Image (spheres, rainbow, N blue to C red):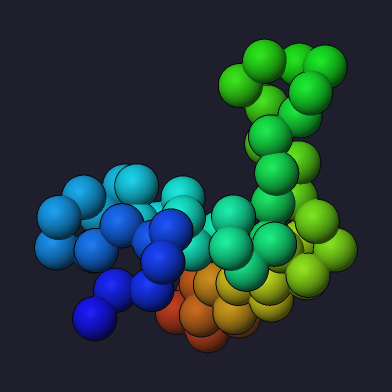
Length: 64
């Protein structure tokens, strides 16, 4: 059963992703700059962890 306010993933993947990010309080839309997303501290920490992981994998294969 879908949680209230979250679009089912099978119904609309893009909206589901946006709903998850909003409900997890990872990012928000900027009020001043239209179309700009502001990452909150937890969201930015996740982004940095993803970057580190990808960087390690790229370097491990010799693609520096």
